[in-house]
Image (cartoon, rainbow, N blue to C red; front, side):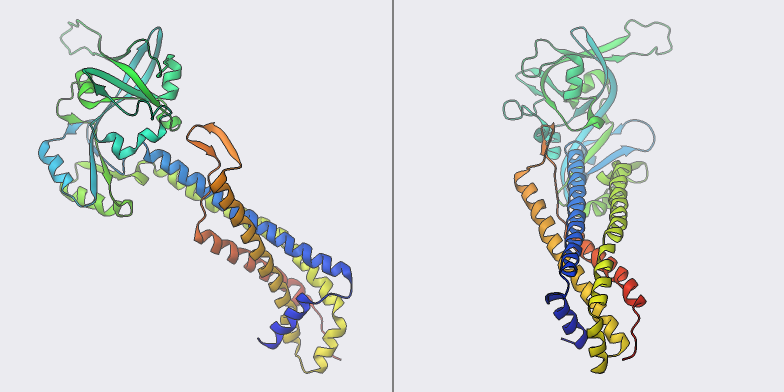
Length: 403
């Protein structure tokens, strides 16, 4: 241990001549601890919310989505499916058709987005996790010669549907436009399905009604055409690599997007929000740690006699200033260490027991938190750096007279 650090450590541990200085020192440590704990808690809460939002989209949106650049539909042949399934990292292949439709249940009507999906949709999205009645009914779109539908809970409430005990079918209508002959015998095509279950994700999916793809084709008459091919992959970290392979296979007539690209504005907003929050926390940290300056000023005043003794022992002005700066640095390190331990403990307890509840969504009962090692490092560096810089103010202003 060098000379300056050894003296600074003794000053930190030793009892000061005036009790008020001891109190100010421990108040400074407390302030640094609270600020550090607040930073790690806020960042972990943001991580938890961001992760939760991304997981919500995972329960509906695919890892990779293929659509046509021109037109609403494209042909999905058996040979295309086989080629896609041969690609490494491709786990699920889902054909989907989508169209705006009119729903009628009893006397209630609503415009909705009809989505017809093939068999692997439930396994790919794990949408059953978002169903309140999953244990009893699950995700089933057909059985025993009957067509079922699963719709958003918001849509079910608007239509007055009780999925636990539906008393009638949902009628799904698609307008039939004039083909140019001037003779039109029908204005709507219709199919009917029995409501089987509901799902709740967020408002972005609040107007979706899901049916079997082949059943939807009875209404849409797309034939072997689809609105999109949705791909589920084994390793999400290789999404870009898989996208590049698909693009090479399909050519430039298709638009291929990863989950991040499908919701790029949302995910970029979440990332920006975290950096803005961190900037605000940095400003708060800078203001809060000014308490350490007061503690350092008081210590300099208290140790005037020691300064003369150190000078007589041969210590230079630079060494003496470093001693006081190092004590302030020690205060910051002790404070941020206590704060990180406190903050991380609270985050772990919240993650395990969820004592702060939300209660607004059946799938999210408590505020989510997610601790990231990078946030711990950022908190440690931010607080210690701000503390070290602000401590330079009294140290540089310190006047050391010659003995």
